[in-house]
Picture 1 (cartoon, rainbow, N blue to C red):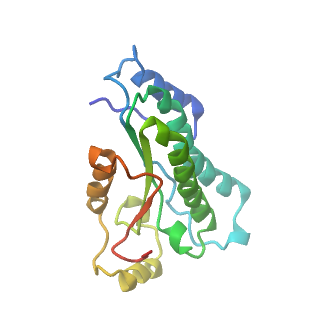
Picture 2: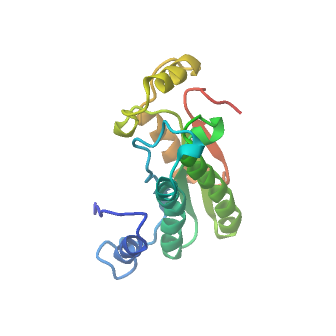
Length: 197
C-alpha cells in the first residue's frame, strides 16, 4: 500500500495526489474505483453560539469539511472509468441540529447536499454517491466534546453503548461494494438510533 499525506484544504496537495494515482504516476494501480471522503475538522470546534463564531473559524471548517470532499472528488473523477463508488462522511449533527455547532453543522449539511448533487450527476456513469452520518464516535477528535453532549447521546441512543469507529466499517464497505450498485444519493445515519428517519 502507498500512503500519501493529503491536505484537502490545499488544491495543490489534492492535485499532487491525483497525479500520483493517475496512469504513469508512482502509485498507479489501475482506475480509481472507490473514494471515501473522510477528512474533517471537528476538534475543539463546539461550544460557541452561532453569533459568537468568527469568520476565520467558519471559513476554515467550510474549506476542509465542505470544499474538501468536492475538491478530492473533482480531481479523482477523471481517473474513475466505469462503475465506481464515492462515500462522503457527514455527521448526524447535520440531521439533529446540535446546539453551539452551527459552523460544523453547516459544513456537514453541505456534505449531505453535495452527496445528492453528485449522485444525480454521476449516476449515468455508473458511479454511486452516498453519505454516512455517524453519531458521536469515541475517537481522538471527540475527546474534547463536553461531557453533557456525551451524556445526551448516551441517554438517547436506542442501542445503549458508546459508538466505536468499527461501527461504521461494515456500512462503508457495503457502500463501496458491488451489492450497493443501485443505491445512490442516500444518507445513512449510524448512531445507535440517536436519530431515526
